[in-house]
Image 1: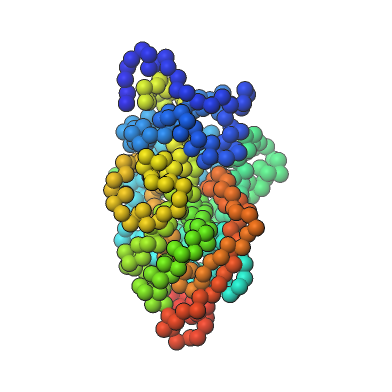
Image 2 (image 1 turned 45 degrees about the vertical axis):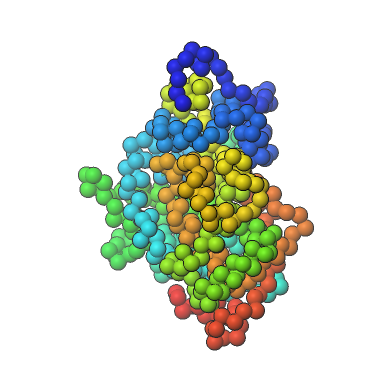
Length: 474
Ligand code: HEM
């Protein structure tokens, strides 16, 4: 992959001509996934792009992605511009940190996401899923994107901060929603006022940051009182010690908490929304999944130990993440000159991998445009090279919450499918829009049909049964 030939140094990869001033920024804003997938098909493994004056390259080849994310990952840091703009939100949390500091933090946070630790969060997931099902009514139309954001926010807030106090979960959800909106504005707008300028939008941003900071510092103080009895993710982070036996500072705990909350809820919420949308478009598959949950669960709340029995639901969630990967761009910045795919890449360049472009490559996925969840029931995953299916990215910086997210996807869908069938109720179909996550623009309006199934639960009303089960588990 790396050669030292003079010709390689002189050659530039092919790429689309963009706007004379802005380069390809406008193409990114219009239809990011469509644009990058088309570039990958047309220009091959490396596409030359430009973001205003900055050189950028799209990689669309398993080996080159691996070089970027695994083989030579120390030469590629996170995209600086976005994280500079949102420093007050993410601070030096896992998502934005780099180098030795990131490595140390990742080591400290890893035990909190170990398989046996996250299994404990399955109960919270099923509990909130059943609480939501308890609110749903037969025949009503609801926006699934709104519902999924709310339930995912509650799950991550509760897993992170609090075992008992439901009111605080609501507060966190509200404060984080404000914060996420502020981050989205900063990401999508090419021109953002500096943090010291008291414009209305900067003041709103500062207020949102202050609100969440106050809450988190309170949670940390409460945790300190009885840390050894706590089982939250925050407690795990507070108990972690580095090589010098030092705990994380209060500021670092705050940065990691905000990062985990933001990285951990909108991603899962969009993935769940797209999955429900896909199920409305494939009613036969939806029925098959209902048969699976009826047969395997017989009306009881699914638990982590049911994951293997619910494999077809996991295939469905994976297929949804293939077609609609929540994160549209894995972005890095090169520290030093290097060579990729025979091309000289100057230090300071932006390097992108598009999960959507990789996931729609016919050399890896048969009929890539089709929804075929059963493909994940074959040996596909074992056959795929690394860095092809990459909704969670790849290499050492792969998503730390990938297992948490898969578990949440499967447990929530299993709970929903037990009690309701889903029909699409929109007049037009949701459009994928690449914001911080791949939002279903226009929402996912769905008509809910209460299922007439005897789960052998004594209460005649299934929804009532859902309420009772949620209550008995809390
Ligand atoms: C379907 C759900 C999710 C998707 C699609 C997703 C996707 C991703 C991707 C693509 C990255 C890597 C970005 C990059 O390489 O630049 C990432 C990183 C990360 N994710 Fe997730 N994520 C999901 C759920 C979660 C959850 C549930 C959590 C935590 C509770 C989480 C926490 C994080 C963190 C902390 C990082 C930074 C890791 C590091 O750099 O060390 N994510 N995620």
